[in-house]
Length: 177
Image 1 (tube, rainbow, N blue to C red):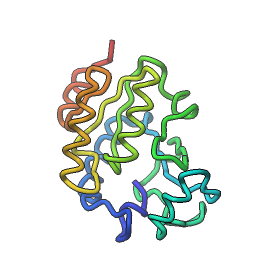
Image 2: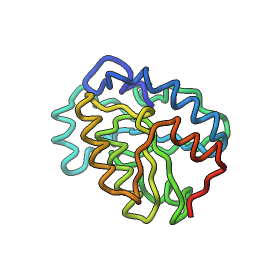
Image 3: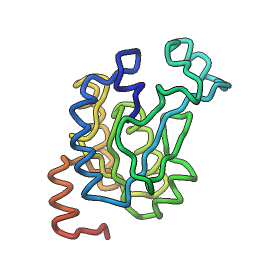
């Protein structure tokens, strides 16, 4: 949840504002286990990233630009991980989510970073739950298509609403086998 996806521009996600209260509610319910991730451009633009940023030339912000700022309140003890890739899955996140554990994903863009992160985590043996009303894509069609694709990965990847998740997890003291 970064300014670059909220503000008007090449990467603006139209339903960004709609998912913020849902994410805030989940963050309160799951206090202490939230990890924030940020996409931050690698100014070296290795390999295909050069062509990518030629296509999205307005997004060539330096790493310290406020465009990459998180737009939500980040609790003082929360972990914030930066990556110059769509997927935020990697050694840092893997160290926080044990093999066989569940990782819950929210945010933007469902059709890019959320999808990429989910695929990496599933490949690494983690269960992934996507909270559909706490994610947004570049369009409603892209949102529906991406969620349908992710549902094909069941039982490794589940898609549910925040209410379904809270009922299953918080209210019923659920833990994944």
